[in-house]
Image (cartoon, helix red, strand yellow):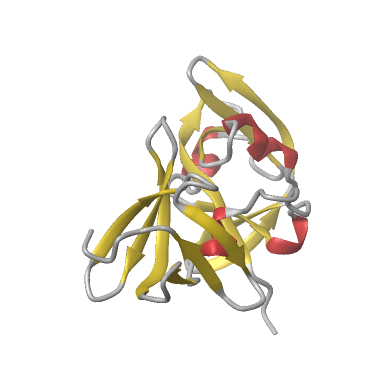
Length: 167
């Protein structure tokens, strides 16, 4: 059975002449991407495991030096590649906290039992995260626990929400 990968970001470009690369991180905070090593990077349709030698903030972004990438030309081939880790590298979520990747595919059901669809993805707005539910139509539900999100049950594969199906 193939391991499950979690995408954490992308290689955004090269930085300097010694093989460093610019990193776009989807972790919160963005520097948390450096908490995970090795990374799995998809090159030419194949996943490769690459150790992070060093990573640091630079200006408003992040840069990293990866094992076996010691010059600019070699590092250029990484531009645009997804950065992933094996799901087993994640720490267990605290009580009441969830990894977005774990919520994808959950069936979304109202407190009255109406099925709205499944979690397609989530995104950040600044004020709160938003759950995108796709069913007979797309719905955007604020991820506010206790107000709109009442429970997340991974064993049953269900997220219970206080949401009017007409919205």
